[in-house]
Image 1 (cartoon, rainbow, N blue to C red):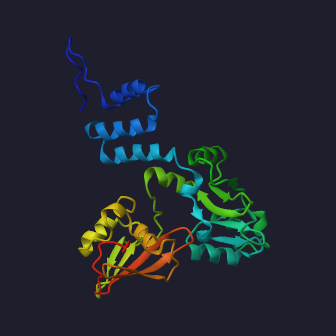
Image 2 (image 1 turned 30 degrees about the vertical axis):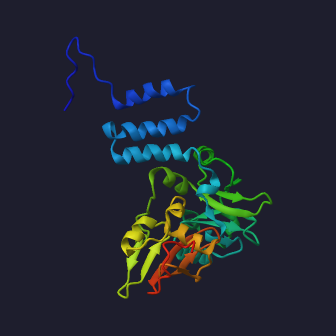
Image 3 (image 1 turned 30 degrees about the horizontal axis):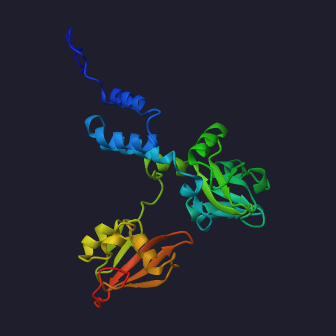
Length: 297
């Protein structure tokens, strides 16, 4: 249903968008940090004209403008790749095991990436009897430094229609991988393929009381679940997730299988981790608290 125009003599009320544009004009040239000012503006006026999803999307766009490639890349330890001499059967098997439709292709070792292969590139070779040569179907990839702005890489991918970038360190070694999917997910949120297995739940409680927890799980929510204080007030200002708590206990990034003990009577086992971050942990109550509220003790 169309909105009736204002009666003669009445002034139309400005829309939320018009209010934002007017406020932006006021901010231009007068704010030391226009992005922070715009974030405050969205937080302040968003509920009047935006849904929560729209507000979050705008804030994600603003945050994305500040991110660099190293903030969004898949670390080297998680890269799935295949040697250029692999036959067709090996390539298909590697794709099936990894769950990815694209694989990096390297010659000799991962520091010498020559391109990427997509599952569609294999169809022309399927059951036609021709000898398969992976080098003939490899597509080019971007090679970028970790300090490049993520937005610049997104624009470059759009122009070139290349969906994969290899991140290299100052010595030319492979440091990580970024896909167009990774960049878009930073703006609109995680996108799950329809044929992908659903992600593991953030927290699972087993019959024996053991908890398996995603490292990104909010620490405050875990404290409420356990009925325990896991950090003192000062530490809580800097640590907000279970992964942060684990790294605080270890004073480094712990290895997979490592077991840490919390003074509140908890045993925390690192179930999944890579050289850059903790992914998932298992928490058990030992029943022997040391009488402290935080790991600093």
